[in-house]
Structure formats: structure tokens, C-alpha cells
Length: 252
Image 1 (cartoon, rainbow, N blue to C red):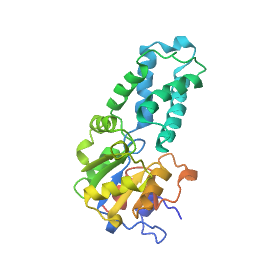
Image 2 (image 1 turned 90 degrees about the vertical axis):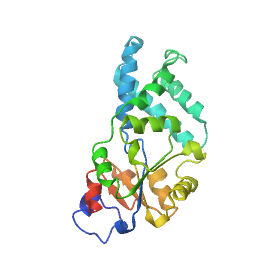
Image 3 (image 1 turned 120 degrees about the vertical axis):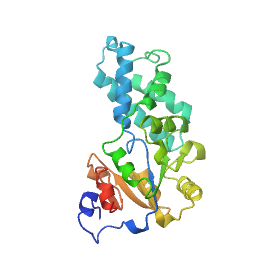
């Protein structure tokens, strides 16, 4: 049965499968979990939309951003299934975006994708309450990052958000050539952190990659679900809807 951390920190619930006393390592996803991907991406796209005067092509900003979101989610799913490579993902999402908007191939200005790639990771915005939560947990637990993102951009995002220093280990799927939910990436974290499965807690927004992936190697897992989408909560040990709930639940 799923329970929310907002209720768990008010009382001890026998229905929770979480064992806070055993937790020594807290492992976070990055995009959509700590770093506000949607906000940062939308701001970058808005800047480029104006810079390149793309309104002349007959679309408004909302349509432009929505088309990118659909295309981006599609290619990331394909990448997670190992159907495409990194360079294909970075190019294909803009090709699909053009298709979504009814544009012919090559309508976007030359270099648009590369400029987006350079600018977006430099955006600083975090999910609400993330910085304060990390401040409270830092020094009390070993904090780590486990991400399916690419090493070059993920380190930039952590530094842009001002949170790079909180994390002891930062592991990307690109480096390991294995993406969540594959067991190899979770096992790699345990190896470098010298951690046992029962001491690890994974927190992320993806029910399959983060929650199920962690649970299959014996970790506890919390689904970070700020949108309160109950249909996507999977089989998480607990549900977190805002970062200010986590320290209270852990007794901090």
C-alpha cells in the first residue's frame, strides 16, 4: 500500500515498508527530481525562440515548448531502451520537434540544438525545497547522484544549481553504459560507496527507472511525485510530494 511522507512524518505507520533507521546512503535522481528540468528547459527555449525570432514561422512560444517536450520525452525513452545513441538523441529530438510543428526538416536555424545544449544546463533552478532539504541531510547521510543523463551536462547542472558539493559520488549511465533500471548502475554505486543494499534509499521521479530499479537490487525506494499523480506511483515504498517532508520523516 502506498503512503505519503506527509502522513508518515506525523505518525509511525505500520503500513510503511520504509526502515529509516537502516538508511546510511541517500541516492537521488537529478532531472525532474532535484534540478527542475521542465522550468530550465522552457526558459532556455523561450530565450532561443526570441533570439531567433521564431514567431515568424507561425507558432507561439507555448506550442514551441510543448512540441519540444513531446519530442524530448520520446527520444529519452528510446535512449533508456538502448535503441539510440547519445548523439542521435541530441539531434533527433529537434527533428521530431520540427515534425510536431509541421515544419520541414532543417527549418530550425543551424546550430539551434547545440546552443540549447550549451545554455540549458547553465540554468540554476531547482525543484521547490530541494536546496533546503540537502542542507539538512548533508553530513548526516552520504548523498549520491544516480542519473541516466550525460556526464558533461549533469555536472554542469549540479554546479549551476549550487548543489554539486553535497554529493559524495555522481554516477551517470553514460559512463557505465548501463541505464536505470538496469541493476548494474545501482550495483556500481554500492561498489564505489562501499554500501550494502539495505542501507541505501533511492529517491526519484520515475516509477520504473528509479523505484523499481532500486527495489530489484534490495534498496528502499521513494517516489518523488510533486504533481500528485497517483496513477504513476508504481510500487514505491513511500511517496514524497514536497522536499520539506523528507527531513521530518527522517527525524531531522
